[in-house]
Image (tube, rainbow, N blue to C red; front, side, top):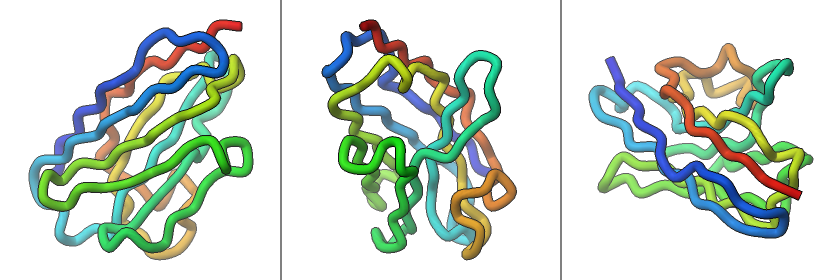
Length: 124
């Protein structure tokens, strides 16, 4: 069982930046990496970014490409999401999760052990 704890969310003005962290504890050695998803009110949870434990296989949603960067620190079992040039449409609860499938990396089914989420609010 893996426990995930997200942090770093908050309120920021459009154009600002935030860095989210996701600390994993427990058995992660059978997984391929980590991912970030987000869910806005009234909408389905959507893929944001993913990376493998080796640092390769990084994928971004088109909506965040060029603005968000996912990275990991294997020594701390922690994954980060650096979010720059934030827009009001980035407002959502952001979740990290453990990726357990080598395929379908942008789909919910490839992930388990979800964190509790951290709120990101971008004001215009």
